[in-house]
Length: 174
Image 1 (cartoon, one colour):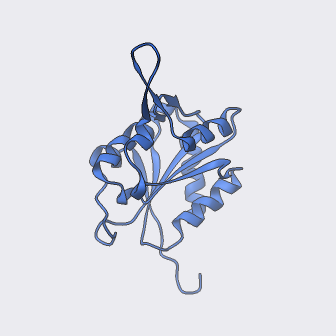
Image 2: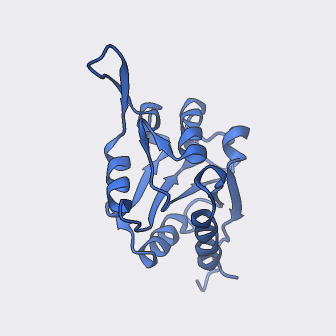
């Protein structure tokens, strides 16, 4: 089975599972082999394009607040956690059941503190105070830590929330 078929199957399995039982999909492969392009192609087949159902979030340039939400006073003496724009766009796209894809690119380049914040997004499908619709699939991409520039191993709690598929290195003809 080719890699696009494996990704489509993993997305279908995610969407068929109850949200709290879902595993995200982790594509693990060498840098520069087309992980991002293949995810974009599969998302487009599902009706999602960048900014309209496909949200690509780079782990290497994000802070914990980009996943936990920005704390703001709620007017009653408490604090609300405002979700970032990417999460609001994704939820709006999926509000009527359309499929959406959250693509966590460069997941192994996310600092350990950001990986901790990602845990709630991947496991509970919650960003700030926003619950992502059930039609959102989570896909992440990572490079093996031994070849990733400035990368970390995925923390065990986060890694266990993913089904990992090795991403093949294309041959010269491809």
